[in-house]
Image (tube, rainbow, N blue to C red):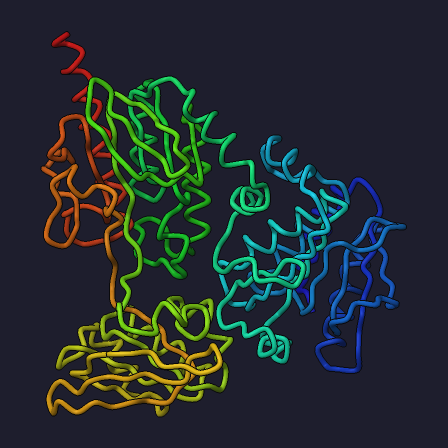
Length: 517
């Protein structure tokens, strides 16, 4: 099942095991169980510290657990963890076997202090690029805390569980049988949600920090670039990011980042963070800015109440998916309304879905989904699609796609907590129409994350921060870069350049300000 190259690499990893581990299989007579048995046998054959037994008692079959020898498994995989989840499997093997995780000591201490029982179940699709972060975080909690267990569940394999739990987006996490959360979550965020006193302690710690020379708000490509350029000047630099990597974390294929033939968003985000941490930068993750105040020192207020001070600020808060803002959208989010076809598409296998938006993102989503679902209805508000011609040609060749132009979506309808259709207005005839379906994928562009700056900085009529050629905003000492600004063409490589430019502008501001004092 594993090719020779992967076996060689995995064998090298397994040499890092510090104690023996067991693979405990709970199998049935299915073809997938046979596939799982083959995988486990190949892994066990690669190291004398790995053994395999078939007497597991897990309720989900086929599945397997990983345990230190002589202990009950606390990490489980219900499904064959290939694709994006293969890394989750490798890390679970190593961490169960005593290999130390690459996690801050404070986070490890917080995990060990969590009160159990905490039984996590994470529904994933093996094509989801957001799911591994969640699976790996929960697996680590289970490894470090004896009161916790973690089970990855392949939604495509356990469709009955998906229907019973009404899971319509991945990753979806349950803890002790209750819904815990959806979407990408890092280890720090999960621990903070489980530890109710963490926010107060965090705010106190952040508020006690000395003033920065440059404070970057945002951790996407623009923010990372700005932080690196500032740190290289030898000045005190901080980054406050709601989620390091930003919108890039939700991007699958990246093929236009010059000098890198192809990569994926999470990989690029990880590389950005690692590059930033090569310098003396104070990275404050999971911190959402809610206010900006000018003064001798510029103050940035965070959601937890902490206030950070700095001589200059670079805002790089990026953008988020634009919503339709119609009845039913919020009510059925995660219950049929989705924004990531790569992640959630497999959950709609054999079902009918709609894609809203006729730009490149919408047409690409429709093409991807057409290979999984029974039928795709693409709705475009304008009288013509705006996607590249090559994409439109591919779309037109697909037999299970219907394109509806001049369509104004008016409502997402549902029943029993799940989407059952979409209402739209034919803008030519004025006729109201309804399409029966089970999923709606919204792909209508981005909105800048600047709501917290209204009344403080000059914003365009689209909510973008107005900047000059140096990245300077309307407030002296405050600069901005990336997708949250008026700079045209929202591209990763442009955001990085703008971040560097804003950082150089901020440094120039600091020099001139100090020279005048």
